[in-house]
Length: 529
Image 1: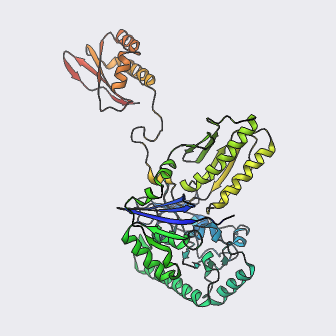
Image 2: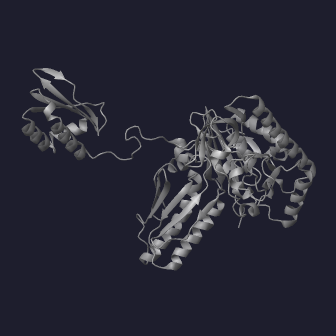
Image 3: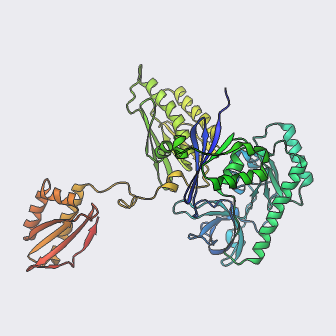
């Protein structure tokens, strides 16, 4: 099987920078950097406890953001609690190591730690605390914090609060794993913990010493700022999305980087020259006249990743619905009718859907609970084929996933680790027209609501007629197909009803106004159902 060609394409326009990872010319991951609070995972803050919630075993922390961050009891280190050095939830602590394969399998598989004291015994309101962003704010949820600090470098991740040495599971050679572990043990200061990253394979002792010294000095600088700065305060800011992508993807996940902005190119080149000098030749400045994402045909795929319906080549399609609690994905045969029998048609559609679903999950950065409703298959062997195909397709995804076997109802439940916002939440906002509901009342329902509300207000109406101010489409309906509603209303109220179309009204919005002797008394209510 030929090696897959991988490339990083960086587009900088105004205040937004987009970083795309391409595999054989197809975009598989997209990172967006803006000058806001959406990409702050890895930042270290001096915060102040705002409120302790014993019932949830969590607390709100003021770290200077618009929205309070929160921390769970399991993410708190305290002098009152002796940490078990053999326990290490690396997937939470190494917050900046975006590739889950960087973690050490032995540590992750260890049993749970001893029982912790309740949160009210660990922290108090008003107390200052050193924390790191474990997950950026997502939707209405504030940032999630941890006191298990992790500071990633080029080859190592320093974990100053944990006595553990781990080796990236992507380093498979046992001799090299032993060499690296022994080198870290002999060079580290005190009980600082380290993870050797994939890029550390083959690293010399001299480079490891330099990296350890850099990370230890960085930790000392953070501690010094914590002692001198008042809370809330930002003590350490992670690298930009651009530099993080270059650092984490270039060595193993990409062969070259193409950038369309001279200023961003200079920044990336300086970073590589300092930390990854042998890769200087992999960075190039885009010189084409056409926008770089257009030249690589990426805009269409990005726009497609924001739509609910995604068509499959066979004629079937999938529907992706995001909710607050989970993501639901539905597979349909669509226009595909097959050639032989229904079971074969269903299997082929499901198998093609598997590849697209895994691709869309990765590109859209969907996280949390994901429920996939495949088309029902009668044969258990076909269900197994679809389940195994999904697991294989997800192997390309660096985020940690857990997939359960298909249920008797044709559902597959899975989870995917979420650290940053999904593409949809990053690039879209709730519809100002429907307030994010996704649906509007039917026009007939709005007419019926107007009728009921007018009757409800009939005792307050003293004028000799009433006016209905409505959206033009509702006016057309009331004067046409739904004219019976107006006739009934005039009969019940024994008053004339006059309809005024208002172009600026929301479809569901209307006014009921009483008129008396030529004067309008607009003291009745304005409605948006």
